[in-house]
Image (cartoon, rainbow, N blue to C red; front, side):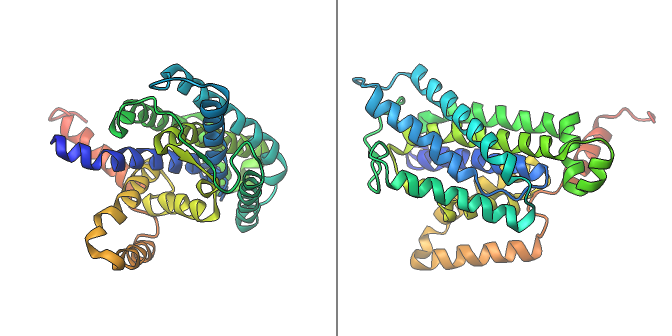
Length: 302
């Protein structure tokens, strides 16, 4: 068992981080927004943590845990403020036009980071100090955070705000006619997703020990979008399952050698064709919930 965790500890934590990144994209999709900006906010949070831990605060030995928590907070807040500034004009767009605008936003951040001395340019920032002794120890922080964000998403889906998100996603004109302010709720969903991505970026910078412009690219945006679409875009469970599955899939296919990328792509295409609603569907979860109720319900009770 110790050998298993020492071998796959890095992968397990990476799966949790990618599931959280998938959740950051799920929030704007709740409001019907095809936003691909999460990797940009993810990169921003990582750069904030990398700069603070290597250029602002110089420590000996293990990096203080309370400073990591501060970096997570700063990454989330900075991403939220930037999302507010970008979201108000950008979210007037819809569908593919919004996707293109958010891709442009990610590329702008990437190019800026490539041309700043404080971010290390194209080389990036290396030697980011570690707050934990080994990669698996990051699970002590990442797993509770994943549970917290998942709980928040579950509560949000059942709340008045979540119902407003769903109404906008299904029919924005009808939602507006019912007194729901589409702009307000779309910007709110965008900001929530950005804050999650920024906080996760701060953790990932320490976890990966290095940070550069490759963390926030168009390719990364497509990967995160695949987590949500393949996992299921109508429930937060889809982002989690998709993040877990698609992060682990290349490692599972490693014995195939050079063919693993081809097989990985084929599996994604097959999944998109035969499971257009994703691996996890709300109807399945509802049916599972009804079955549980039936199992615990006393006989003879209506």
